[in-house]
Length: 218
Image (cartoon, rainbow, N blue to C red; front, side, top):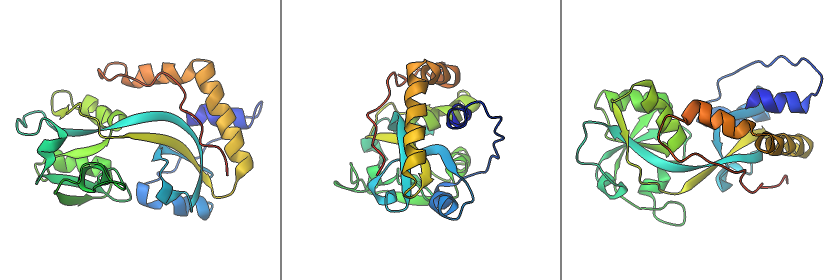
């Protein structure tokens, strides 16, 4: 997706992309200090981030789900997460939908939060029995589950929807508008659906099939 958008931003030019890891806790700082120009990293558009980043998109809407070990027979629905060990990935807000009540969260369930550096670390700790569940967008979890077939299980009990956007330096309206045009073209020409089928077609998930309503560029 990043390659598609960058080609659209610089038509006819051979632009070399430098890839840099952008963990959740560092994305805004990386955009502000020029460490990166754009962030494509399952970056959820939430109000708390808006003072520090301009978002292009969203390019897809993704339900939040929860993953447990396949051998876990006690956690079947979100309500079973009460008093369990839930992963807290640094810089991520997904856990709030489980443990916080409205308006910031959804369920308000008591849980012991187990800190982790990122979602890969969450999955390692889940695999090692150091926590009971990992909750975030279902496409993310499906990727981890597909990498180790039969080891993990998604509950299939969504709690809210995340809208993924492209992170842009705060106030860069021109780039935001260009990114939005590229995202619209990606859905119009079928590329977005093709990529979703390529990477997630075998997961059993119901995949997004349309471009979400744009947020607009402030």
